[in-house]
Amino acid sequence: MAMPFDWPTYVACAAIVAGAYVIFGITAFGAAMFTVPALSFFFPLEFVLPLCVLLDVSAALALGSRFSRDADRSELKWMAPFSLAGAVAGVTALVTLPQQATIAVFGLFLCSYGLYSLYAGVPRIGIPRHPWAVISGFCGGATGTLFGVGAPPYAIYLSRRLPDKAVLRATLSNMVLLSTSIRALVFLIGGLILMDRVIGALLLLPFALGGIWAGHRIQLKVSRELLLKIISVMLLLIGASLIVRTLR
Image (tube, rainbow, N blue to C red):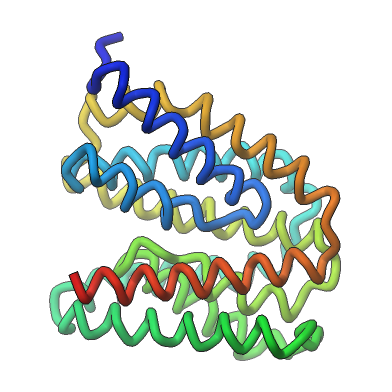
């Protein structure tokens, strides 16, 4: 197997991926927030984005298969079709809306909501499924296609529906799997998933899986309240990264 990068770069990329997927193992989302900008220092985006999508799909499969028995299937049945509809709408919006302004607005929303969640205490459980499952599914699908960040709307909704930490993580990981799979299919159809990306993902996958294992061990020791605080911080950081992207 020919390596698409040299050994020093491989070591640096492996460390980045392992650290990012520790976060993924704790929260069930957020790895791409770290892997995409960090790996972009070494490779062009047309190499990084497909590679990271392949890692995300593999990671979500590993996490989803492990926790799928805990997932709330009734929530998934409502969210999944609207996530697909949102992804289609996102593709349309990608070529019609002013992208930088849209990214900035979404980033400001996530920052605002992350700050609110951090200081508002434990969220109220029991918001109605209708219409919020529809809204979160659609928005997650659309933002995943538009920005490569689809999990925050799912996390916001599910954290207010599911009181059990294991069920929350399992359901969120299954939605992340769906979202990243759709994105991978788009890249495949667009001819971006080439052999060098596949080889790069295979070489980095053991470090992603190791990070997930470590993150899972960490989250077993934290309370649901702390997990929600971590998710709030992740939303804040993702929002800030989107704003920085528009400024750059």
